[in-house]
Image (cartoon, rainbow, N blue to C red; front, side, top):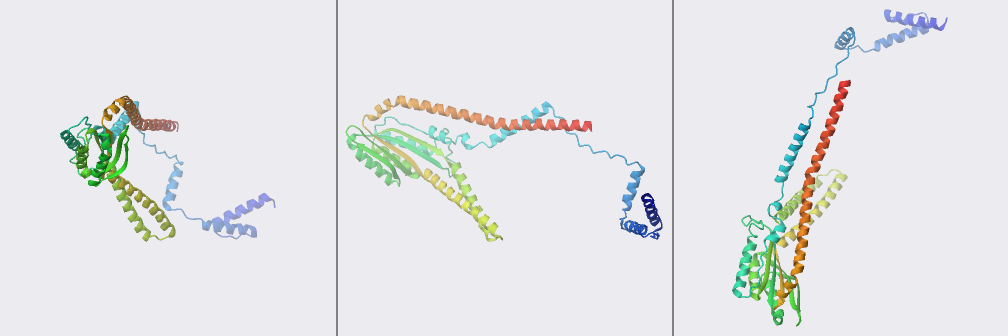
Length: 383
């Protein structure tokens, strides 16, 4: 029997077995194939009734193609719409900048406090004028310079850093006695001398003192210093550092609260890895707390003690030195004005870039979105 005949015999045997449900062929190989076919048919899972019905309906319909769901079309971007969106973003940025503007821009900056609160008194030889000068200067300092300095006397718990510069005139032979009196006044009002220098030569006699005096006793100390010798000039300035102080204090409180939370979590730690991570974080928070404590101590020292600079000059030297230094002072002022102008210009450029860069990014994102939308529409049209 040829191979073709064997194949036809086996196929006929399989059909017979599937139709009759019995494997009864005379040839053992053919009968084995019949048994295998019956076993395979027995293992075939039965389809669900609803699936069979749906498949039958699709077969009768010729298996039609399903229509793809079209994505909802996005609104068409027009140049006018893009311009309107950019204008809205620009308005939002301007409003946010105005709302988040720092208090320094409203008149609480240190530059304004140092330049707007200065009061210079020239040529005050009489004792009555010397007594009146510190009173007026003290009122100006207590009030923060009024509107020029931007301080608010009625606001509670303000932190004001004060600095005073005085120039006293004395005969050359009394310079040492005047220096001792300056030190005595400072000690009497609870202050201390940070640095001092004194020269009592016949040709050049002068002295300088860097004092720290408690702010609450500053006015009394200034009156006594003005009574020691004629006051050639006196300059006072104040700077409001309340915001810096409150910010450091709030950060310290937050760090302490985080440390308490970390300690509580460390007690409940379940694994060594978790405990080690919490200990590392505790070390970082502890270093931050120490730094903030030092910053607060420095701020308290700057506000609790006023900086008082006292310059002692011999008779007749104050006016000549002023005349000799007039040109240099004018040149220094010109350099200072030029530096302020450059700083102001740089600030304007930074503000412009802060607005232009986000707008440029938004415009770029809008252009990319419009390009992607056009490409998708072309693909849908070609599909």
